[in-house]
Length: 428
Ligand SMILES: CC(C)(COP(=O)(O)OP(=O)(O)OC[C@H]1O[C@@H](n2cnc3c(N)ncnc32)[C@H](O)[C@@H]1OP(=O)(O)O)[C@@H](O)C(=O)NCCC(=O)NCCS
Image 1 (cartoon, rainbow, N blue to C red):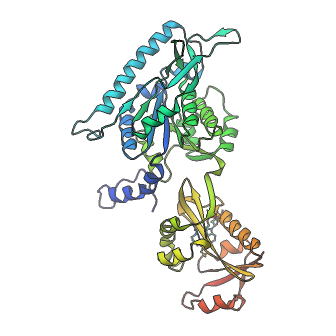
Image 2 (cartoon, helix red, strand yellow; image 1 turned 90 degrees about the horizontal axis):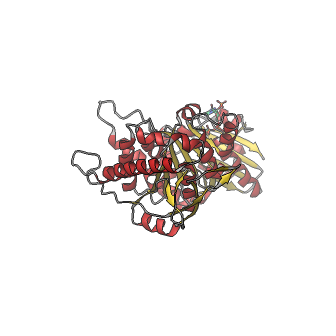
């Protein structure tokens, strides 16, 4: 069963909490001890969801995610970098003071009837980011608009290791003692790349991107889409900086809509989320399985064993034959698998499964290709499969119906007459 973020009730009308919580477990494990940089647009700070977002961040912190939080203070300035004169700088500093107080107050909240009861978030700020002036560009002096000169990675990591939430405002200081406003998107990207963050999360004006791309995009697809957009379209700044972050080796960038309450939680802790995830093209990997994959493979196969599409395999059997398995891993989770079993010049493709949430995107084909490549490498001339309900899928991929007598002797002796599976063979 997959998680639908709108489906929070079971048939009896009670919240299906246990089921949802259990299904989130793989995401909780996958996010533990990972560093994530969150950047909130100036508009997100003024929105009524801001407080709930802070409470959600406290929860993520408790679940073991290492959090760096930054934000913008002026929507126009953040999206079209204009000079910051002294008067503007003073108003940004004042607004920053108000925001800091709000964040600290919310993270300190512990009232018994609030979601923060027991959270004990320790939030830390400091002069970890050193600034330099942006300078004069095309004859225009940008005054107090600065850029990041360097980041004190060692100190930041020391705080994250203590499970402290780092708050890094878009105000930074130079060694000459001057104060600069830093573009929040640039600051977030720089922090994510310097801190080797696993993910960068933009809570911005991403509604239309989310509508066009609910789910995910590869880096290449997002670059193509960006090239078709006007530079002032909503969400374009966020997307542009997400692409820069991925080019600087951050694994994942999430574009979320600050107006959507709870999107942060559904995005990070359900299988699919509701925002837009942009990922490096190697986010999906097919690799040979190892011992630690047994539980993941078992969980994947079980529903198909119950439907008698696959023969039941015990955990012990999987452990014994784990080297025959190849898993399709996405973001650290096993979403598909296949097994290859060699009989001299014949080989068997078995246990081919793709989680139903991830079907119809050629991943089954990719797994088949992997098994074929392994077979060819091992001098296998014929690949066979026994199937009860998936015959057409194999026929459409070059397998032809064969007889039981065409199978290797060892396999024939194991054939289960009751299942009455059809035999298909592909010549490689
Ligand atoms: C077979 C399976 C691995 C394909 O995974 P996938 O990632 O969706 O594969 P692809 O994207 O490469 O292929 C999708 C195509 O296969 C078709 N397909 C899926 N199951 C099929 C079946 N049982 N019979 C015929 N075609 C099937 C889909 O309709 C789709 O075709 P379309 O694009 O023309 O609509 C997946 O459907 C699965 O896990 N099925 C249940 C387990 C199973 O039957 N395994 C085989 C055991 S022998």
